[in-house]
Amino acid sequence: MGETMAVRYFLLDRVTELVPRERARGLKNVTLTDEVLHDHFPDFPVLPGALLIEGAAQLAGLLVEVSLNAPDAEPPGRALLTQVDRARFHGVTQPGDQIVITAVIDSLAAAAARVKIEAFVEDKRVARAELTFVLKTVVSEALHAQRRALYRIWTRDLKLPVELR
Image 1 (cartoon, one colour):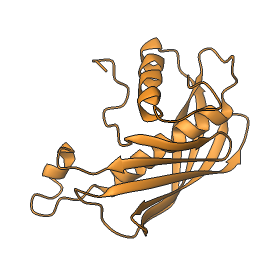
Image 2 (image 1 turned 45 degrees about the horizontal axis):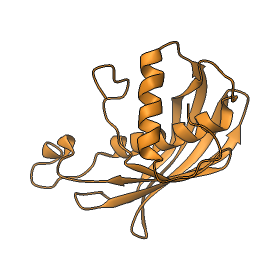
Image 3 (image 1 turned 180 degrees about the horizontal axis):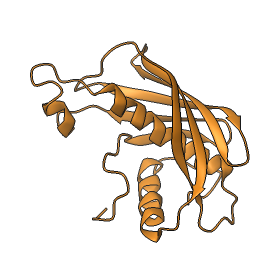
Image 4 (image 1 turned 120 degrees about the horizontal axis):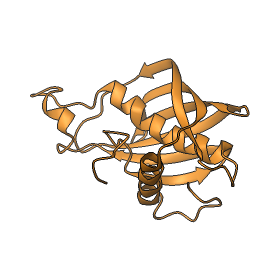
């Protein structure tokens, strides 16, 4: 993906469901190749809660973008996380865990959205929060190219009702 990356950490491996204006589901596989685990903590590696929220925000941001962008918007708006509320962590995530993240639209406005997220390992909830986003026009072809490539990777196994831009 080159040197023009807008996001340093990709904390979502796959999107398994995407229903514009409603919900999305995605997966994050925690592995020892996640560099942050080497220092957090050396003898007890866990994915930091802030990065778990970031992974959920990446999924929720995609959902917000496909929900709010007009099909002909050029450039498309990008979802910016502006607020995190009621974040709660109920357990740790460690190497070998597959985190299932759900994002459900709570409310939509013309250029903003509130999304409830939850994260589970097997059948145990490990995190939840409410995220607020605004849709912002960003003039950066590098960003848009990076997002299109990333979204194609994340959704490669889905038949989508909309084109990801």
